Image 1 (cartoon, rainbow, N blue to C red):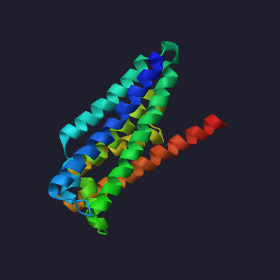
Image 2 (cartoon, rainbow, N blue to C red):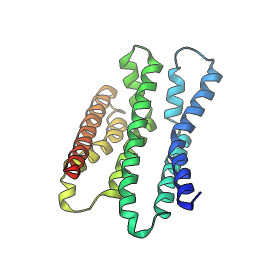
Image 3 (cartoon, helix red, strand yellow):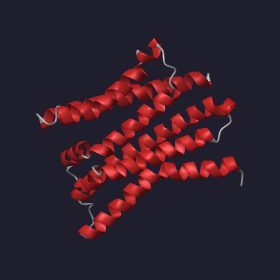
Image 4 (cartoon, rainbow, N blue to C red):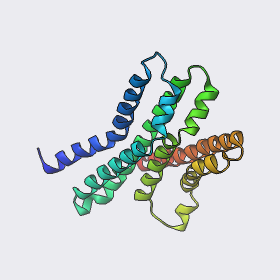
Length: 204
């Protein structure tokens, strides 16, 4: 096996660490609480609010990205950074979907409770936002045009999600939830729309 191939394998494993660590920790807590058909909301919140799990997952992704770049020839690093950016966006999307599914599963048919848990479980929201921001930072060409682009506006909206959640939410919980969800939807839409347009342009 070549050095590059083995490094890529290690990077893939590191990219999976956030999901593995959260899953294993959640299962352990679930077993300790007593296995039930429905995931306890307390287990979901414990996992998504645990700073250690968040730190382990984030550092593992950073390490995976570093290994990929470090094992790539200098002449090919620009293309590799673009590939890593796409990988980070995929991690963000998978993380967000799994967190949403888990929040719904932990609350049964109570969608209001699921939405509240999704927002309150801070790192379950912050992690995918951070991955999206990081993917943009490593692939962006920094100029005034990019700062005014829909993608950059989407990034700013996503960054404001946790800020509005904790700053506004501390004073008025309902208002904080509404604004956070609105910023999340807006930021995701602008970011995905820009990426879709860029992909179509590249194909043409």
